[in-house]
Image (cartoon, rainbow, N blue to C red):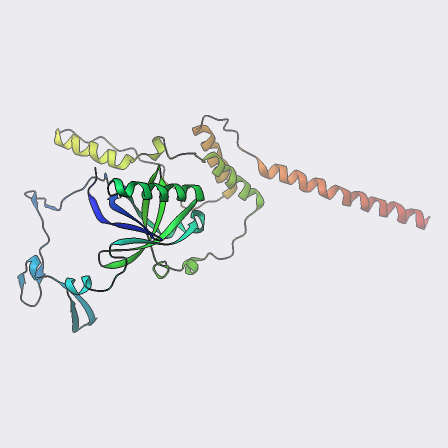
Length: 301
């Protein structure tokens, strides 16, 4: 069972639900230490005072705000703890919204909220079921590490999940990355939609959703531990530096996706169908021109 990160209560109108916050995710990355390669000794970062030219202890270290290059204002932890913060021990629900109305770029790490004892079980379940039936998420305010944060509450398999969210002023404006005017044909868009359709999944399960890099690192460490030569890695296909024919690249991608799923890999040939339609539309114009010529000849006769 993961350890409790934070304890408090969910404030839901006049209802208070005591909860414990536990981590909802795990990090399985292989971690390394910095070592001196000559003797494999650990290389550590030491905290050093620039003015006194000596190493300092953790008890001598505090917070400081640099007002200017020559002026630093000290801020004590006790001063931060004494500041009025209504959400210091409560996750205050302030609004309910459809989940699709929240930009995913604002949503951060997730944490499970665990009811604190049997007394909290009933109001906890009430909030969870109300959220599920309404098909909405709750937007909340809470305080961690001395600052007030924005959060999102949703339900996953009957358990309430809290996601940290970013404030509006923490999201950068993407307008500076806007592309110049680009022209696309309907055929290219249709082929891209076909590729999306071929790569659509109902759930994130399968060999393509495994962490192959971590597995390779673990195999490398195991081979070196046993004194064996590490297995040679398989290089992936290098992406092309420049797409010469976008339509051909899309059609080839659709064919590969079909092959990967055991389907017929026949390339979808959209441009020819469109060309046939255009030719068919031009035929009535030729007939009209022929009628005009015949009429003119009759008039002159």
